[in-house]
Length: 244
Figure 1 (cartoon, rainbow, N blue to C red):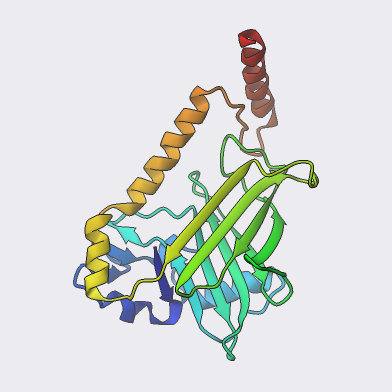
Figure 2: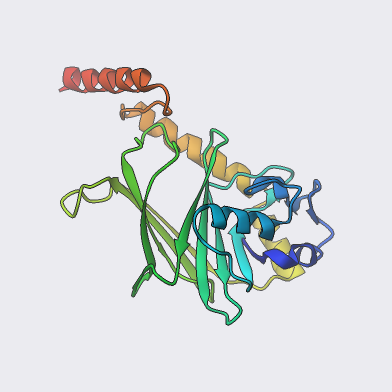
């Protein structure tokens, strides 16, 4: 993944002739892959999204952790924006979540009021977008995030809303990264190791979904079609009862 200062993306992509901005290349940043109107500067779009959620985007650096486009294709299950104030203190974090259905939600965290734990910044929020056919909408996300540094951890769990300690998380995802310098040598090495990273991401998502479907896991329809969701869940439950 790339961790870039949003105000210096053009400079960063000059690191290599196979990198570009808003154009086809082996590795490229494209404004269309992130929130808001792609004709507007990314900082302005972040400020508008933060304002809509009741926050004020600080004036300091904003670091974006994301997958870029590789050979013209990108898919980010989640991108992170770490927003600092002028004194260099982390003020806000945006978790920009995308679904394979082409939808997107922005989950903002106020780093100044969120819980601080030994493992990082902790925040719990209600899920507001259908992401997986194997997960309903009556769940909460819990994020535990560390700041970008020599290493970085982004941890997310999913549990039933209002379940309490007796209802442990049933989905757990952890991203662990180590910092590498943004140099031509490092970038080219990463491209040769992972020449089509975003295709691997989307392929892995569908492969895991296929395995869960084959195991007979109940499925949920996208919101707006509750009858289909009930029918599918009932069908799965009947199969389980017949199988013993």
